[in-house]
Image 1 (cartoon, rainbow, N blue to C red):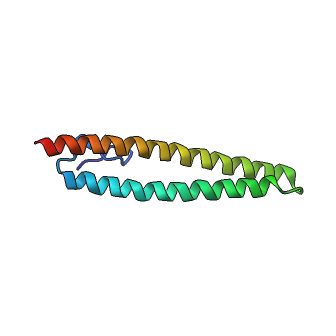
Image 2 (cartoon, helix red, strand yellow):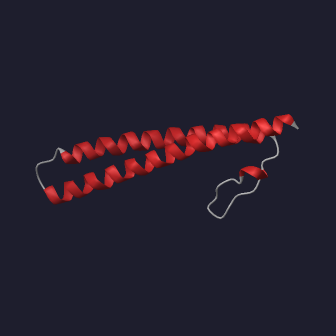
Image 3 (spheres, helix red, strand yellow):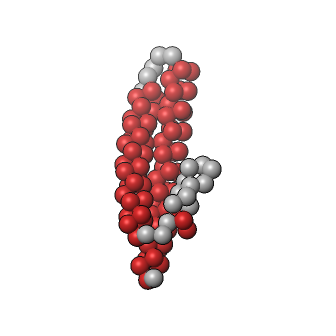
Length: 96
């Protein structure tokens, strides 16, 4: 396996179905991490939005938390797409 400069696995460098299975398993754990991060960020955003003191501070904190939640969603969407790509690649490897 090889990885690009961003540390992402180059799918065409995977030559074994078991490597595909490991990659999918790894990404499923990453999805869990992002789901929890998103959930927590949204909870914190709501908490900060409910504060009626230090409105500028809490408003900024809520915005930062909502931004984090959006980035977690972007990562979750990317993981879903990558899992489909891995399955297609694994199917091609199984044909050989």
